[in-house]
Image 1 (cartoon, one colour):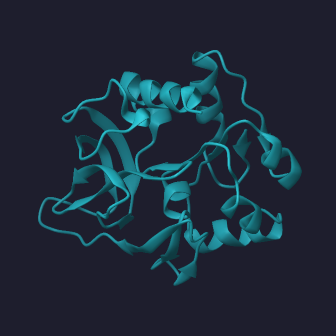
Image 2 (spheres, rainbow, N blue to C red):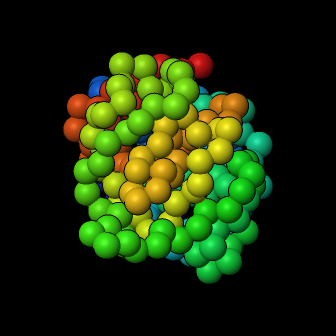
Length: 194
C-alpha cells in the first residue's frame, strides 16, 4: 500500500513496484492502510504541508502505531522523526531527533540533488545485496544527523543518514524508485521483510 501523502511522485513509485511484479494500491484511507501487509510513505515538498495532509486524512496517529513493515522515502523518511526544522514542524515521532536544513558548502549546493554513494554502517535486511560505494539518487534540502538508528550514511560535506531503521519502520533519504538496480534491490528487500 502506498500512502497518498499528496505531492509525491506516486506514479514512479508504482511503476518501480510493478517492475518487481507488485501492484501497489494508493490510498489515504486509515482502515485500508492499517490492514495492508506493507506500507510505503513517499513524500516530496514540505514537512509542514505533508503533516497537515496526514492529520487531515486521520493518518498521523494511525501511522505511529502500524505494526507491519513501513518504508518512508525522502520526505516520508523525514516525517518519521519527532521534529523537522522545515517550518518548525512536529512530525510522527517514530524516531527521536530533529531533521535539520542542509547547509551549502563550496561545491555542494542545496538541495543535494543527484547520485551519491552509500556507506553502510550496520547490517540490515533492507540492504541485503547492497554495498558501501553503491550509488543512489538524492533530492533533498533537509537531512537527519547520524544516530543509533542509522544503518547507512551518505557524505554531503558531512555524514548524514541515508537509511534508518527503528523496529518495523525503515526510511531512505534517497529515492529507491529512481536509483536503478540498487534502488530496485532495496524495494525488493522491503517487499521480502516480515
